[in-house]
Length: 180
Image (cartoon, rainbow, N blue to C red):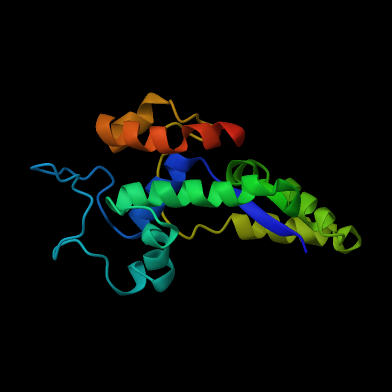
């Protein structure tokens, strides 16, 4: 059995996940509150807050203290990275940024890694090229761009200095192991 682990720059992954729920990326708290807790005016609803997203935010199942949705998303990135790092030989690692940069090459490598190279063809490459040209959501500029490191100043602008420092502290060691 071969598993596939898709790694993404943690700052881009956290921002994307939070945006998918239409929540503030840099919530402002008051009186000691980080601003990351849901209120009656900002709790995601329906299709934006699926059961999978609820489970992803519930880090208490792993014995971690819930301190807010941005922190929980960072904690989830770390937990998933740890699963890969515990037994990397059981996985094929796919970096999201590499796939974005070269979808045909990455898919071909994936097909070969599962022993199906004989099924790869020019039609496969053409299908992938056509599929990735389809825009499913409005593209948004990335803080540091593809291949950016966690220390790119743009991330501090997106998350604010305090939240950026918290995220960086949580993910930096593992992010470096993935080349971020």
